[in-house]
Length: 121
Image (tube, rainbow, N blue to C red; front, side):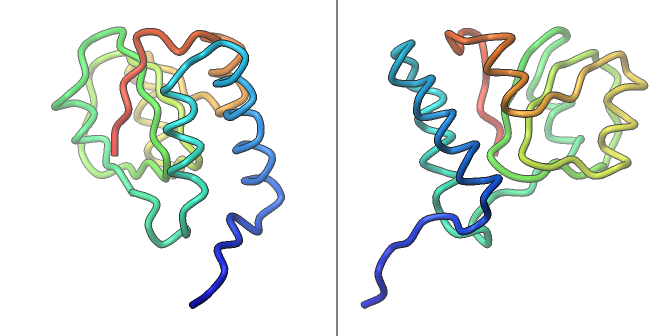
């Protein structure tokens, strides 16, 4: 049986460390959940499309994606999204709709308590 090693990418290791640290300091379960998902193999990380965000999020909502956001579909609502990666078209569509694309570090600074954030996967 293979030994569990965790992520080998130094950037992912750094993000996981920061998410876990924030979870311990502020007692937030959402950041711990995202860190656990990012520790899994990359092939398990979800890819989410813009169309799913349009369907499940309301105007002004904040969501975090433990994987990559793709640009399939349309979005008309201004929302704030944090993801590990954004495709160029997804980032463009969100910004054209008046939304924001944030890195994990930016969302940790903006919302340290993790309140009112939805996990989309």
